[in-house]
Image 1: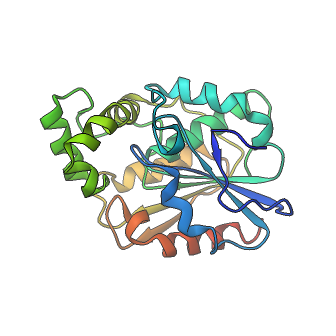
Image 2: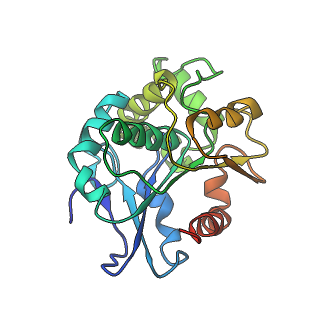
Length: 245
């Protein structure tokens, strides 16, 4: 199945497991491309490409979690074709949870597990002040402090003009979305950065409320965007977490 929502860099019809990857706010599927040749032979990587990025750059980005879930639901049959795992980083973790919650409520096939990276538990409010609505200069200053947007974008007025609508939409969701408490019958594995100042240990531990299974926690020597600096290490941990599936 080929469509604009899914980017499958290395199609593998013989795969017995799919890993659906949800990027962070402002992130594109490209952050997962280096994983393709590191995953086991029976695993197919599927990067979720929401509007406003990648080949969908010219489409308006979703500005609410419900709009994202509505689009994911359109392609629900593809998510259930094979056993799968959801991986998300930061906002991507919360999208993965909200979609799994939606599937559970509708009694549809669930992922075998969720791997939630660099995210507070979705039912908790952020401990940061919202900034998606700030004037451009202040908004861009906040982006720089987060260390997740590439310098070549931040330092180019032309690129920033192109990407600002996407970034504002993503951070509106990141700042405002708060999940209803819902305990999933799905294991949740947590990855977190030891130097991540945006998330507290209590916000990490609170994921336990959302799973009927004991959560696992894996630390990385990095900040909120350790997935970029430690891409291979993160992929190795993902391999470890899916080995027994």
